[in-house]
Amino acid sequence: MELRRPLDFPTITEVISEGTGIAMSDAPDATQGKQPTITPMRVVIGLCLFAPFVAMLWVSSYAKTEPLFAGIPFFYWYQMLWVLISTALTMVAYKLWQIDQRSRKGGDAR
Image (cartoon, rainbow, N blue to C red; front, top):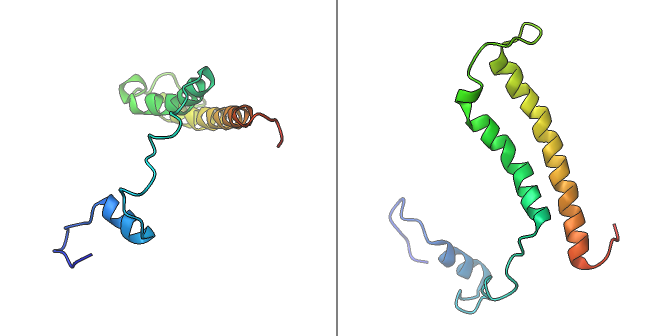
């Protein structure tokens, strides 16, 4: 790779082809193999991971002080509740992903 001006970054294909010594035209294309399978379980996994983002990014739904919980305004306890909910949903998504991977491999070895 020749010297470049500052902020003239190489493309990802240039970096990959230089780092591996394989030209990108020789590298196997990711789309040539199996296409990703969308199953109901994977949709549930996606929803488990996406729900906390929606809940936290929709600020107008919880930008208020009432109702209070133990003297704490709704704005704060709602977010703290979502920390716990997000943890539970991430654990559920992880367990479902493990089940999905075992079923795709054809066994249930741990």
